[in-house]
Image 1 (cartoon, rainbow, N blue to C red):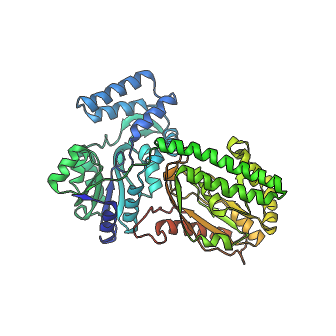
Image 2 (cartoon, rainbow, N blue to C red; image 1 turned 45 degrees about the vertical axis):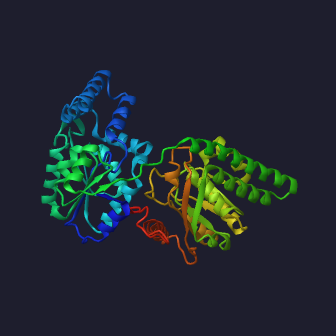
Image 3 (cartoon, helix red, strand yellow; image 1 turned 180 degrees about the horizontal axis):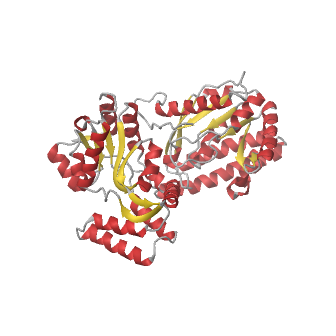
Length: 490
């Protein structure tokens, strides 16, 4: 029985709330469209932490497991031994870096929606995986999943011994671990949900009352048909094709042509501001059109009537620059980190937009620079700031830095939040290639800074961040759950 993501979320919303109902998610191939073990092994090899002998043993065991029907437990033991002598903290740090660099983009957006639907109902949500805690934890943390049922590695005095305290939770051992977790946490498995993709998870899915075969292996698909389990196929993360590469190249040419035209127009007319406004509008519109990106904007009228202001937006992608340029269009500049000043891609933009460069390594110099930003606002130029400070690897919001809020308070201008919903899906943070599609934007009502004080600023920032979280969870005009984002403590 095939089901859609929307129907799954509706079914979750119709179930009773409470921690007595569990939701257990497999990791590789379910929450993620890739496999963390391969990425982790490659990362260890490139880092020089796995030698040729250990690598050869891992390769032979992988071939034996994948093609010859060997035991996955043997492969796990060889992998564990390869980590012997490593400090657990160093391996954890490496896994966190790998997540931000690579595996974060493997999270299926619709799987994120399903996780968040369970969290909204107060269900006990857990990742159940044969992967190690180091592999699972960054994904679970990003999705807001509080519980891990996974393969645990043994350590002594913070050093890995090359053994596991649980054994590899693959197949029936994983199902047994889920049952034990349910007993220990008061979870009623008969009312609980399970999601997995592999044939080895038939026992795990059979342990819960509401199993779901998600992007299933053919063997699991046959089992689902036999047992009457629902089958859910989620879309994969976008992979750039020829259209994306050609469109991105055309967009880069269009952006530079638009910016150059703006500079020339400003020189010819002697009106630098008019040239700047013309160049920004031309370059942003040309870049988006040539890349095949459309905008679906809620609250667009707010952008024109609230000037000057401090505009703030969440930041996921290189695409954000074009989207925000197309939205703001005129009489604004941006605050950016000093390092970006030397990026060749910023040369023409820097000439036209005249951004404010912040030296984050020098707090005294940064404060002095921000005083100049306040003067610009009082002279009528709006400011665009991305308060997370860097592109985030997933839609989960980062912490908001204080700079934008200090500036708005000192200048006495309102703050206008601009919520970008899915730019990271069209162009991942580390990719320069833009996939065609529609970017959804919500411009929220301006927030006045009248009466703000330095003492109360932390609370104001928390309130503002919550507006972003709430908007992403309850998208204006959306008929479905949408791309919901779990809120961590700001």
